[in-house]
Amino acid sequence: MTPYEQALIDLTLADERVVVMTAENRAAIRSLPDKIGSRFIDVGICEQTLIGVAAGLARRGRRPVVHALAAFLTMRAFEFIRTDIGIGRLPVTLVGAVSGLLSDGNGPTHQAIEDVSLMRGIPNMQVYCPADQAELVACLPAFIESRSPAYMRYCALPPAAPHTEPFAPGKAETLGTGSDVAILTYGFLLREALVAQSRLAEQGIAARVVNLRTLKPIDDTAILDAVHTCRLTVTLEDHFLTGGLYSIVAELLLSRGAMGRVLPFALRERWFTPGRLAGVLAAEGFTGPQIATRIQEALA
Image (cartoon, rainbow, N blue to C red; front, side):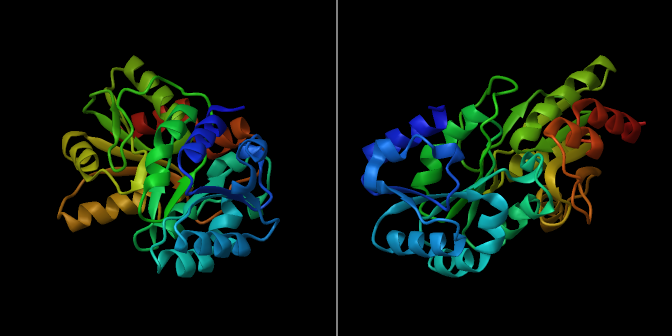
């Protein structure tokens, strides 16, 4: 049993309102049916029905925690999420598996690289992006207890480094105090950002890494501080350039009348070539050493 499964079981048994649901995507919750009985619901491969049932349960006071592949959850069922959950502002929590580059060997149909844009575009929808298994478990209570609808990119990889700050929605974790460059990131790419930070330090370049954790609510203070105090700000995300972190930073700077030099790492108007994760990272220029090299070039 994984730590995520155990944490979800504990929360479910402690709160009779919690119901765990899936659309025949049990990889992350395989141990739950035997532990929580009738409060585990699998509707089969029909994501729209999944959202409709979850909305109905939420209307009756339940707290559904919905699991499906991120691509199908946020796109196939988008209208249902927007209309049934979003307009009603129902407390349904959505967990999207294999988002972004984590779709690994699957093709473009399974690549959720616009999910952040879609979900943050729904009024009152929160967006959680844990970096690893430890953060996934740490954010789970706040995720489920949110009174608003919420979407989370599921990531259960081992931590790349110990977390220095407790999880709180809208509060970033800052690793390092460098003022040459700030690397803003979220999700599993935190590990590549930390590798880049180490490589840059070897070249005398002081970098800070800002793990944003939630993209909605966003930590405005951490972003503005990075832009105002660093020579260069980097946005690093496994998402389309449009609608993700780069867009969030641009919107924030414009709304505050601020200016800064921003270098984005994102996918531009194309899907990434399918492959194993390590190969995809290298092919797309998302490895720590590749990130460090581009930052050095930009600073030069």
